[in-house]
Image (cartoon, rainbow, N blue to C red; front, side, top):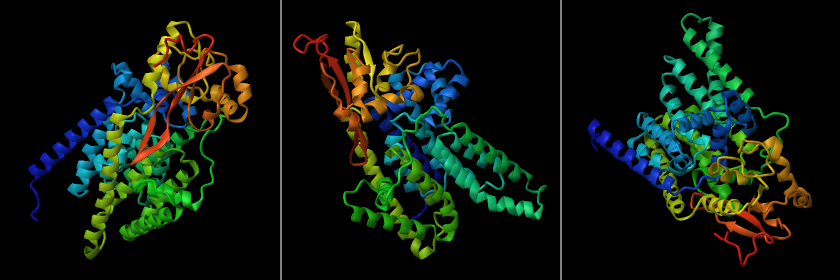
Amino acid sequence: MSKMSKKTYYIIYSIVGLVFLGTGFFAGMHHEPWADEAQAWLMAKDSNSLMELIRAVRYEGTPALWHMIVKISQIMGLSYEHFFVLPLLFSTLGVVLLFCTKAPWYWKVLIPFTFYIVYQNSVVARSYCLVFPVMMLVTLFFEKRKEEPMGFYGALVLLALTSSYGIIVAGSFLLYECKDILLIVFRKEYETKKKELLGFFVGGFLVFLIGCMILPPADCMPIIGGKQRSVSEVAAMITNTFLFPMNGTVLTMVFALMLVGFFFFYCRKHIGQAMVYTLPLIGYLILMQDNIWHLTYFYVLILVLMILFHGEAEEKFFSANECIVTALIALQCACGVFCVGTEVKDSYSGSAQAVSFVKQALKQGATVSAVDYHGTALQPYFEKNIFENRPGEVRYYIWSRNNHYIDKYQCEPEQLYEQIHSDLIVAQDFGEAKKLQFEGYRKIVFDGNMFYKFGHSDSTDMAIWVKKDKFPEEKSTLEP
């Protein structure tokens, strides 16, 4: 088949870009933000200075880049109702940069509609929406990293500013470059390679500095990580990322081995390089990965390697490799379409319904408390903090101050019952929280769903316990 003209490519990419924007906007209009999204919004909104924001973000274990972007958007007039526009803009930028890479044109058509790109990082407003455009920037600078080192190392610094996972990936790219830097030093080629040396050391220092800055303070109780995962759990992480969740350990192990084997075969001419890029992230995910959206970095990194090493295999195997990668990408497109469709039908957090309920109660003089982090999803809809058991003007969740409530309902719920006596008590209705039983209260549940691939990965239902003597069921005007 003859090669298409540049004009034809431009037309195809323009159509893909417009469809991507339209799909993301349509899903975003039906999206109800969850606590993670609300937390970043509130931290940006309620911080009165840059230093205050940076100090607050230390408890999140992430750099402040996303929060500063959110702050700027708020100053420019972005409303919480349209918060989804921000991740959609960054994902669209990533799609545009993807079009500039050397990936096959049909990969460029499919990749924007894969699960992590079209849904997890375009509809849900979290810092992970930055990883796709920044990794595409790294891809574009990669081949010219010797001639234009400042652009390449600058992109790695940006990657480190996206999250702790970004720091690990940026560090792995820097680690691979160490061999070339050592050769320059041993050969004393300082004059001819001064730009490369400067870029490496400045970029490396900044990535290291960012890593030091995000270390949580001593009074922040760790809430994730530190888990010892079995081989089957690691296999599930691989299949969840590139296929979909599977039932059955044996099946998961088989498909995980097939995916790993294909990756080694695809990158066989650069196997050492590929391992340096991927193993640090895999190790970090094994130690720290606690939620499915953390796998975004794993997916995008492998995608980048597929693009960088595309066409490096022997000619007789090339078409088969390309077909397998294309099929895997197409599968993720199906996952993305499913999640966008279900987002339109089902709420993500139930926060909007819960807010309406709480507003009615506040008008009647009710007091409100929150048991855990998930009540944060309600706060952006109010100008001041609504929870009486969280003193202070800020509305975001302060981990050092509030973590003891998590301890109380998981370990010593009776102490929690003794401390909270508000008219309304807000808690996530999932896991250990389902065991809560407040005497003299009745529970109302607001349905929420977290979509992952071809199903629901988690419940994000929100429960509000209502005091019976103040709001009798038969006379209550609070029912949703």
